[in-house]
Image (tube, rainbow, N blue to C red; front, side, top):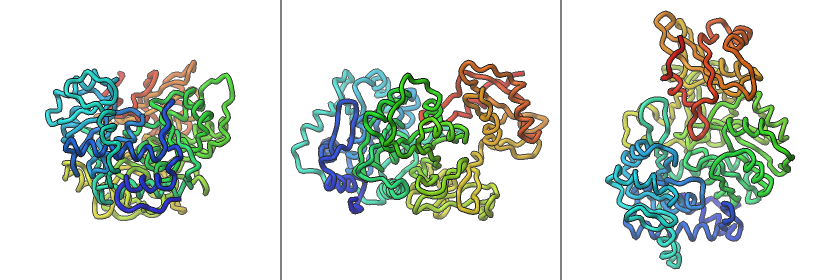
Length: 512
């Protein structure tokens, strides 16, 4: 294993290249980059960006799917001491323009296939000085990315200009209400989190990761990109999730580590295939981003005979906070103990630590905690208090230090003055074999304070009525926790990472 590099992220990857230079770093369809090729391409792009006037502290946006250009650009931007600002490719132009303007980006890197979006976006972001596009683009005044790199490839390899406490990335979180907030993560944050994950999962240069999670999200970036790059491991990039291409990649590329979100593992568990895939080298799957129902965990492990562990962490924590240890005791239903270097407490509303078993707000401390929210000091002060990140999530610790997520504080429902945790109701409804997915939200009610609404997506070909759901809940829950309304939909609205968008469900009309 390489020695820990000083400086920023690019220095750490340069150290990997010095040790594992001819090993494969990135695989994308027919394209394969060694570690030496990766750092030289990233260094050349950094030189080209510097020629355009990008300096330390500037913001450069990435409007890119999972592709080699994302990895190269991310490293190049952070090597300059600038901030990478990843943007979801499927946002509306209004949503994307808000992020670009709020982040005050000076440049944006994208692909020519996104020309129609870029042409609409460009006039909405007046501060955007440079548009760098990979491929033949028709967007006016665009700089060709490949030409910029080739023009600097023979120049001396750029040294890492970043220091550990420099900001490295600005990731906008979806949030539960209002506009997204930009979490500022430093080089120290990212490196500390990736190194802790490396220790926990025992990652080596013999591992191969499948990066099907979007790299614009912190889970994908840290676990599927930064972690393997620090370890000399290989990254297989896939642009989008589909069960058969994933299974084919797992087998063909001999994937050893797969990180995903519960909906991915649900689809893989239920998908119908005409042949059995050889997944014998796949040693661990990691689920995060949303609750992993215990029946799904067990169903996936039974079908594929592969260990699936659940973890937890918000973007503001870079993002991994806890994981059920692959080489230790796993507790289904828990998100595991804190990873090395991270401390977790559960506190009451006054900030006082609660004993094991009691529910309160989860707070986190460690080198992985963000620097703050971009241009939002009020939200920063509310969220970071001393050394502690107040997550807004409700949970409890057991006597062994394993963390159990109960719910988001903002999602908690108060019925007649009594707290109802939606995740508990969801877990009960999810036990029904006719249910594919479920979300529970609270809606205003003049008599009770709030009513409980369950939104259910039935399993394929399943026959299910609202009365059946309610009767099942009555058998397994206290009366005040039973949904007042059950609504059926083909699927639930989700973010790119598979989180159910509960605000959309709250905004829907309540059936009479």
